[in-house]
Length: 160
Image (cartoon, rainbow, N blue to C red; front, side):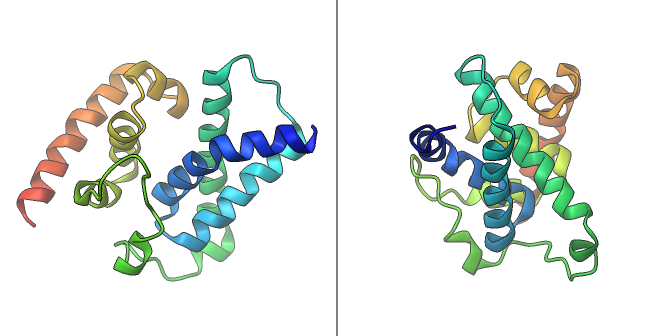
């Protein structure tokens, strides 16, 4: 892979990879570590992409897998977990194409299966079929998770 090709991938996908990593890890430092690892794997394995959808899906799936690996690691399991995202971390998670969205922070506090489906559906604009492929789950499970996640989100916003 040439330096120019790598730089193009980096420019096009860094923001997406970081957002997905932050959604999974809920912390700036862990999200940066995961993001860096995604691009290391891109250099190491140099995957062939069939089209732009396949390319984007590879980056998302790889990011999710790396985040899961980090969460399963001994180091991560022996440190203190912060369930809520601190106000100081919110500044790092900026979506350039949208205004500050307090709902996003409520979505990120939901259980993993609901958070991922809602995030990809509403914030990354993926279809149910695309989400099912990315998360490797049946479409009906995605629909159910979206429905239950919306209910939980409605309840969380109502209690604020």
